[in-house]
Length: 98
Image (cartoon, rainbow, N blue to C red; front, side, top):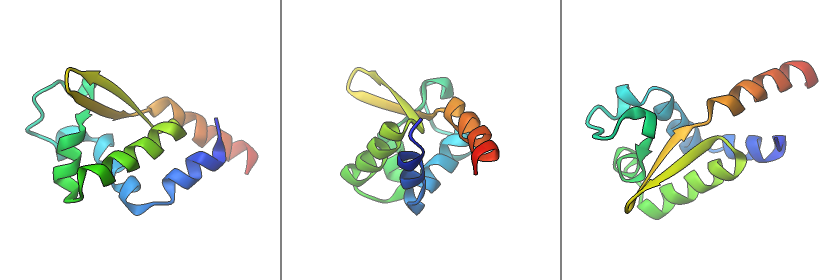
C-alpha cells in the first residue's frame, strides 16, 4: 500500500465526491441496471458529476492506481466500485503509524 499515492488521490474534491457516491451507490445511482455488486458504470458517474467523460476517467484511473477503486469490464462498459479492503487497511495503518 502506497500511502503517498492514496493521499494524493484523496486530495481532490472530485475524487472524494466519487468515492462518497460509490460508498452508497443505491442512494446515488438508483437507475443502475447492473447489480450494485458489479459497480457503477463510468457513464453514470460522468452524468452525475456533470464533467466530461475524459475528466472522470482520469480521476477514476488515479483512484485505481492508488487502489481505492476496482473496475470490471463487461462488453463495452467499465464498472467501478470502492475497494473497501484498502480503506480498512488505511484506517488501521493511520491509527498505528501516524
